[in-house]
Amino acid sequence: MIQKVPIHFSDNIELYIKRIDLIDNQIPGNKYFKLKYNIEEAKKLGKEKLITFGGAYSNHILAVSYAGKRHNLKTYAFIRGEELESKYQTNSQLKIASENGMNFVFVSRSDYREKNKLLERYFREHKESEYYIVPEGGTNSLAVKGTEEILGNDTENYDYICTAVGTGGTLAGITNAKLEHQKVLGFPALKDSEFLVKEIKKYTQNKFELIQEYHFGGYAKKNEKLINFVDEFNKKTNIIIEPIYTGKMMYGVFEEIKKGKFKSGSKILTIHTGGVNQ
Image (cartoon, rainbow, N blue to C red; front, side, top):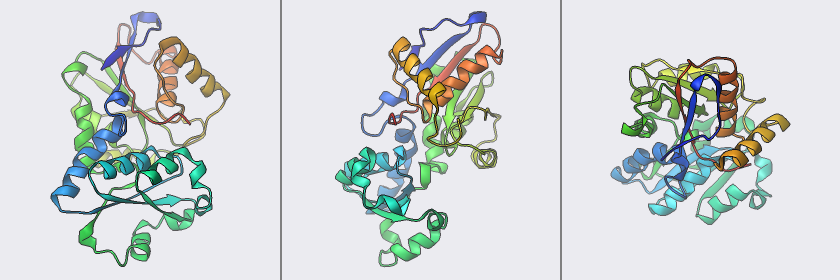
């Protein structure tokens, strides 16, 4: 579903939003596409367990918990921040993931960086043939295969495709699927995101551009300016976005329109990648 954003812009620029956040009420947005072929692969290989990684407010963790429940796969997640172990029930996303049957291993931030060692330490008694690893954020070649399906016949007439960027899998898939005349712009939600260029280029040969000025201090960081923008956008458009990913991307698009980034008469398509309002 694509909606026109009902806001007037100069230079005859038109702004649209593709509502992939509405594709599945449990596994919404880009998570649906990222997990689609990973779940297929896990089942094809006869795996019984999914193991993944994430932070306290990870939409990915929640999506994997729902996917496991739906497909009768046991789910496990390494959660960054051992201090959360005693209070995770106060975190709405972790609480729901737990209710979906997900098992958590809370680890320190330093231990979290050594993901292979975590598997050796905590899953020594599990047979490797039983479990399937879904990487943090869900990005791998199968995830990119899925996110290529975000674009289709309904997106051919747009000049620019804009998306938020976390681990880069969604941007890579969109970049692979774009048409010759289309330009892809990514808006990272993380600070110091130069490493993303290298990561994204593992999965695509096509050109893309990262616009890195709109991270607002880093992942899950926000300020009054961003919160006010998101609130105003939600009221004016009746399209609900959040300040973690889609809100930062949309703020960046508005600012780049003001700066003259887009040619007169352009049709811009933004991707609503889903996410929980935090």
